[in-house]
Image 1 (cartoon, rainbow, N blue to C red):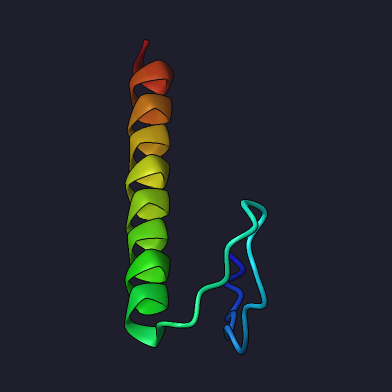
Image 2 (image 1 turned 180 degrees about the vertical axis):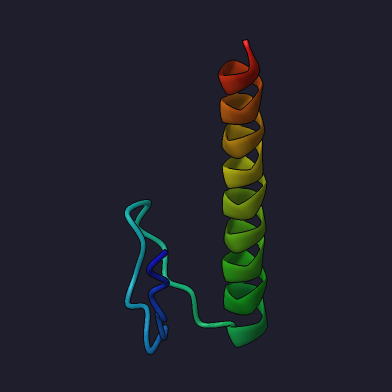
Length: 54
């Protein structure tokens, strides 16, 4: 498995058009996104395990 390390340096804006200047808010948004991604991956792995048993 290949794991990429991503370092967030600066965000100028988002696709929604607003700017994020608050570092704590940015850290919260990134950690929330990572958590959601981890949960989604876990669910997909669980579903694959169920399908392989059928």
